[in-house]
Length: 67
Image (cartoon, rainbow, N blue to C red):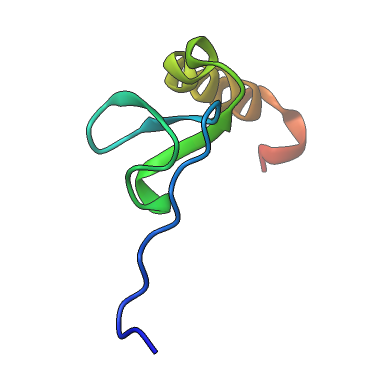
């Protein structure tokens, strides 16, 4: 029995945006808390922060969440 588990290798074609390094990575290279994804394409992962900002604006404007 191994004392430490080796991290699962990333799958080709899965793209992530690493918040810590602020870059796009193929496969999960960094820990889950530091990344967004998976995305189907490199382009989608590259725009992860823009997409998150758009969603945040939508939530801020949603009357169901403004109490």
